Image (cartoon, rainbow, N blue to C red; front, side):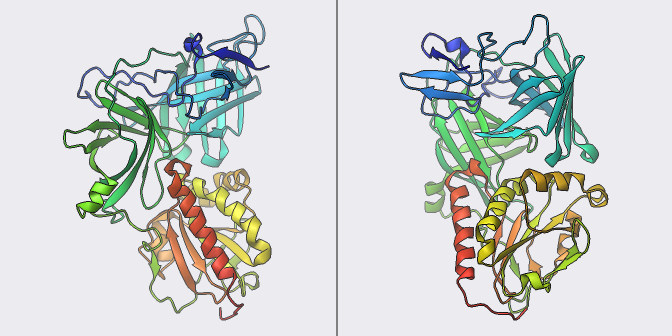
Length: 466
């Protein structure tokens, strides 16, 4: 059943798009978010897509998908009198290194068929399985190798987001409740592209900060050479923008202040302070530019075939000299199921393989996993299933062994990294990292460049000099 209502007369039932309007106690953040209030909510502008299941209708109305006549802030209530139901949107928090990271999630179903979803902008990260019984909630996210365990007491959820060998994050959540719009009337505009000056462990001198804004509400992403932060979302209040992200991975919190000279002060996770300059101003001033992903990684001798030989996930050994690769264009993907940016790339590569396999494209993934995963690659198998990967996935080693296992590569430090191998077996190009949809046109450009490279190599004459 779909219920419609008018925005002007039903503001209290609005679901917010960005959902991170946090109350800051003063102009300078004490302990920077360590005592964050779960995000409030304001009604999103009609021209912004809503991640929480609403759909714009003619006449300025909103449709709440899946709603019934028993509403709880526009969400389905208990199916029977007295029955516990978790269905709805929840304001949640994970605690990472003593830092509260707020986010929004959705729960639906009941009993042995509970479903949970995190949000990464418009994308949903849905649970593999779930159940709710006797006040205990359990959700599994198999492709991440994680579980959410929580107890439902007095209308709230409390528990932990368990990451297996990597530890856990304390978790708490309460039902979404809209809060009044912020009183700030003079909201600065930070929309656009920014150059963030850094000195990264990978040797980068700059990152990109990509911002979309509608009034006080903002979605953004920081794009590094290996990929981005996922969609950061939040709002302006008390003189600052507060943005955060958690979609089962990449927990982060950013506090952003517009300085008098028009630059931005960006504080990441209460520790790392960075300065951002408008991209055009940075270019005019001769500041360092972000690294070119197509030039970041190379090989020592381009005249030598690119060699690999590793055990396949399902047994046997796969090598570059195998007949299946002879005379083919090959993408060698350096990946890992622990890597969020590899999750961003995987569905694109899986689709690329289906589109171009019959024309002579092969893809092989060299997966670098933690020791426990190498012994029992349960998470990796779920990763393959989740993204419908049909090409071979090889167990190449642990991430710390990357340089040792692929000694031909130069400056191979980004997960993921793609090597493009021509029909002659030689490296014809590389691409470090992969920007997600949060990076806007940079995501579209990366996909277009990879497709163009594949089509160019497929169009070359067939050779067999491997």
